[in-house]
Length: 296
Ligand code: ATP
Image (cartoon, rainbow, N blue to C red; front, side, top):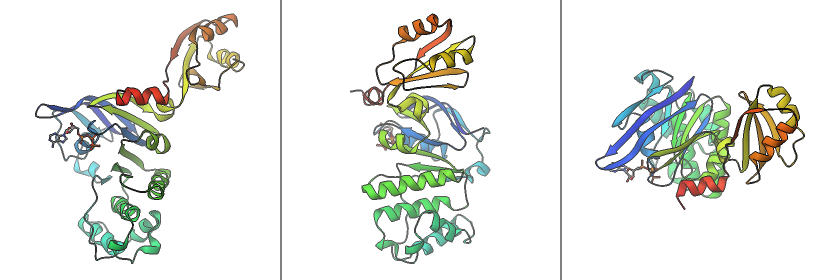
């Protein structure tokens, strides 16, 4: 069941079309990246699914149902840096955030541990590094143990160490079974952290799906025939490929970028007694996807 499905969502600010008929769904357990350059509509999209903004047209569902307060309680959000008290400790700030959100304080120590702030929990917020402040903000989103977390550009403004810590934290949180939906303008970040992606450009959804398939720096040839078992076994010895797998009813043949040749693949299968009923070059290189994205 998808935790979020966006259906033909559009949002206009006067004449500006920030989102244009966007549809995609976020599988449970994924780290879902919303990737796009500045102004592509990422924040507008997150604002809409968190009920801060009303869509102009279209709708979205949470946990496959019409969104209600009970669904929203299952989503921890970090859309902008929370206003923590500078003169209070990290722990005290979390206690206040928990009280505001009407959650108990008993989970705070565990959450501080998750975000690796136990050692500095009694230090004043004003003494925290930017990375620690961001980890405290993530801790605040984790209050109430929500199964879904929504982060807007969680590594923005951090130094390389801070960025690595947040990325590792997101992987840890995801490995605890939580779904993460995050906006990012960094292709590299989405590749490193996300399992799935939706790529936006000026409000249009360019593509969505599994990161390995969309952003991988390989060519993917998708094939099918009447006997996929035989096809798979024949393609095991196909020269110049990287790998071959059977997945979701298709055989997927991977090549180094820009080397897949559909005619050669077709001829090889035919020579080995297989007539294909499906042959498709699916994957574009990371580079071409990036150019498509930035329009260079
Ligand atoms: P960034 O990374 O710069 O925040 P973004 O991908 O999150 O960009 P949005 O902030 O959603 O993009 O903006 C999408 C478009 O909508 C932009 O053209 C932006 O200028 C416009 N926009 C956003 N908010 C408003 C608003 N309140 N009023 C008018 N236009 C807006």
